[in-house]
Structures are given as C-alpha cells and as structure tokens.
Image 1 (tube, rainbow, N blue to C red):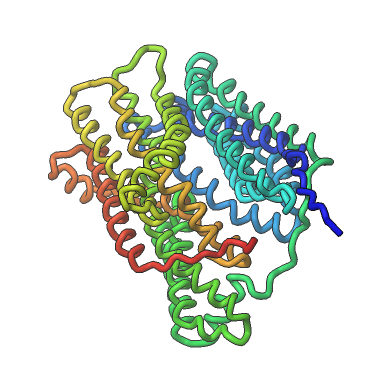
Image 2 (cartoon, rainbow, N blue to C red):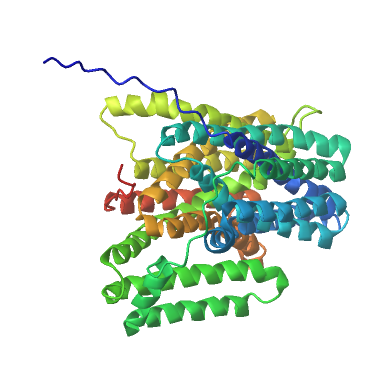
Length: 517
C-alpha cells in the first residue's frame, strides 16, 4: 500500500492587529505634542516668562526650570507603571493620565503671562507624560500573541520611527510658530495635538487586548530586598545611614526652590546605600524567597553600578535643549531660522544613524574581528557625548572672545551627540531588559528611566555650584568664561564616566533572561 505525503501549504500572512494604527497614531500625536512644547520651552522662558529677573540671570534660571521639568518627566514613570500594574491596567492608566497631560498643555497656552499657572502646567505635563511612558510600549506588546508575535518587530520599528518623525517636525516648526504666532498659540498647538492623541486612543478602546492588573508579587525586588536588609545589622545599618543622608539633603537645601534637588539627592542616597546594604545581606533572603528571586535581585544590583555610570551621559544629552539653544542664540544665522530649530537635527540623524550602524558599520567591524557588544557600544556612546561637548566648549570660547560664526558649526557636535545617543539609549533599553529575570524586569526598567532623572539632577547641582563666589573666582582664574568652563567640565565628566564604565564592563558577566521560545 502506498502513501502520499502532502506538503503543508503556508497559510495566509498573519495581519498586523487592527488596533495597532490607533496606538501608533496616538503615539505620533503625543510625541509631536511633547517635543513641540519641550523644544521651545527654554527660549520662551528666557524671552518671556523670566523677564522679571536681571538679564544675566535668565539663562541660568531657564536651565533650572527646564531640567527640573525633565526630572519630573522621568520620575513619574515609577507612579504610572505601578498604577497600571496594580490597579487600572495599561489602557485606563494611559487614558486618564493623558487627560491630565491635556490639562497641563491647556495651562501652558492659557498662562503664558503667569508663572504659577505656567508652572502648574509643567507639573501636570510631567505627571501625564511621565506616567504614560512605561505603559505605551508595553501596551503595544500586549496586542500580540504567539500567532502573530513575528509581526511585533515591524510594529515596534514603526513605533520608534513615528517618535522621531514627530520629534523632527515639532523641532522644525514650533520655533517658527513661537516667533510668528506668539506663545499662546505656539503652546496651544501641542495642546491640540495631545487632545487629538487622546481621542485616537479612545476611539480604539473596543479593539484593544486588555491585560488585567497583576496582584502584588510576594517575591518582588522590593520584598526580597527588605527581607535581606532585616536579616543582618550591617546591611540594615547601611540602609539606615542612607536614609539619614537623605534626610540631611532637605536640611542643607531648605526652601521650596531647592525641593527637587533635595528630593533627588535623597533618592540617590537611599538607592546607593540601600543597594549596598541589600548586597551585604542578600544571602539572608534565601529560604524566605526562591533562589531565582534572590539571584534576580543580585543581577539588578550589578546592573545598577553600570546605570549609575550612564547618568553623566544624560547630563550632557538633555542640555541640547537648554545650554546648546542658548549658545545658538549668539551665533549668526538667517533671519528666518530660530535657534531651537537646530534640535530637529537630532531625530533626523537618529533615523539615519540607526540603519547605518546596523547595516554597515557594525557588520564591517564584525568582519574585522571586532564585535560591538552592548557594553562596548554604551562605553563609546558616553565617550562620543564628551567629544561633542569639547567641540561646543571651544565654540563657546570663540564666542566669548567676540567672534561670531555660523550656527551651522553646531551640526558637528549634534552629530557626535546623536551618535552617542543611538549607542547608549537604544542599546541601554535592550540591555536593561535582558539582564533581569521576568519578575525583576519592571524594577530594572524603572531604574533605567531614573538614570535620566539623576542625569538632569547633576545639571542642577552644577548650575547651583557656579553661583558660589569661590567657584566663580576659580573659574575666572582659568581664563574661561563660566559657560565654557561648564562645557569642558561636563565633557570631562563624560570621559571619566566612559573610562570607569569600560573598566567595570570588562569584568561584567552578561546575563541572558529572554523568554524561552
């Protein structure tokens, strides 16, 4: 008897879930809204909202406001992620915090002449934008299952592309709107886009896959850490010392204007000394928690050392929207071109450099026998940011000497800084995900976002330091102006961080905690 084997015929291509366009449209409008207001914020503060200050103090005050705002944006993901995971789920957290976001944008448009009203708007935007940040990308992932997970990469590529697309056009257009239409309309346009973003999200509500909130994990990062601290005096004493240092931050930095700096310094003290304490006593958590959970905490603590060394990069990167814009104001440029528009270079270069690196540069280096591992890429990225700041530092020296030159020279430091970004930011996100077991991924991703908060804290600390008479006298003795000296200081900060990062990375054993297929 003969048998006939019939080859299985491939089925029709699995379509991308129909709800995905709603999420992509929502993200595109939200990113235009965020970058639209963010990229004109420094210029508006200097030219309008802070004109009650002496002219010499406006730039420094604007930088303080800007970086305080960024600190909030990257701190509130902790709250948004917690609300989504424990109470409301991702969709409802995104939707309700988007309404808060809309209210913040409305405040900016209505209160361009009122500092309390405008600052209230910034606080609401920080809460809304930061709160939805950890939810949106994971909400995209929730829309896929085993039958169509191979289409997820296409969607995530589109997701990342739309972020840079929105950022590019916001950076290009919003400075023009600010100059020609005034601040009320310039801030109103991002507000309108955020409202459209929320409507698009709402319109797809009946199509989304809604993953319900999860119950508290008895073996979470914080629970294992607390068990470890209670198991011995050395660890608990170290953590208690961190709490004492945190409390002293509010004593030495009193007053409402210092609250953000004091709070962030307190957070650094608690994480640093608490982490050391947990590391000392981690063995004491065994028995009360599974070995996998204990080793997961150990893995998170190892990565935190690397994360701490990434914070200087964000100190440099986020100043492209403050310090670099203020420098560009002193450069020669066409009458129609606004200093803030230079920021459009960043997303444009990101969209060029990522395919260049992945398709040409990294394969070429691999053929030469040099593998660009994640840690090598991050080391080089931090160093490239330092190179960018050496360049802007020397440009500032020339400007301080009274020689004006074209704003097109800023293309060079933007290129180095953006190369640093694609090597640090995209790589670090994937690296953070891969280094912790599933139960610890949320904790590690939260710590990754906190590196941006801490990076902007260093900017506030340095800005406060140069207001000290002894510090300014020392800077004067170097022959540099205050701004140029700060630029070279931040460059040295990055080079030192890159060198230490590279040394630590050499002894770091990379883990692989992706899900089994």
